[in-house]
Amino acid sequence: MPLKIYIDADACPVREETYKVARRHNVEVIVVSNSFIRVPREPLINLQIVSENFDAADDYIANNVDNMSITITSDILLAERCLKTDGLVIAPNGKSFTKDSIGGAIATRAIMADLRAGADMPNIGGPKPFSSKDRSNFLNTLHVKIEKLKRDLN
Image 1 (cartoon, rainbow, N blue to C red):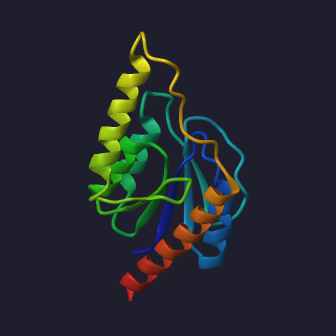
Image 2: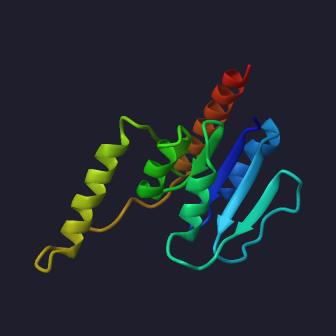
């Protein structure tokens, strides 16, 4: 069973970093998007264009991941779906989503959505800007997860 990396391509800031690590480990990357985006023309890197239907990219990823897959996404609900199939999930900032942590992440997401929807609430802002430290954390986490999956294969 080959290792695969799925990228939820919508606004993913670490596609190039993913390609770099995947090349080093000889792992296939599937970039999932509902429109054309430029990807390197290499045998290990493939673009999967899905329909423009709501959650079509998420559905494609969730229906294809397994215990030998890594999904790159900042979408907490997609992360939850992938974890149900025993896939590994990494956010672009390098944070791993796990079965133990996903419930808290979903609850925090719901609380923040409620706060942002409050009519008399001050502007509470969104996530922190993406940083070079986030990029470095991502590279390290992806490398570690691939090594783990390789060990599991043997």
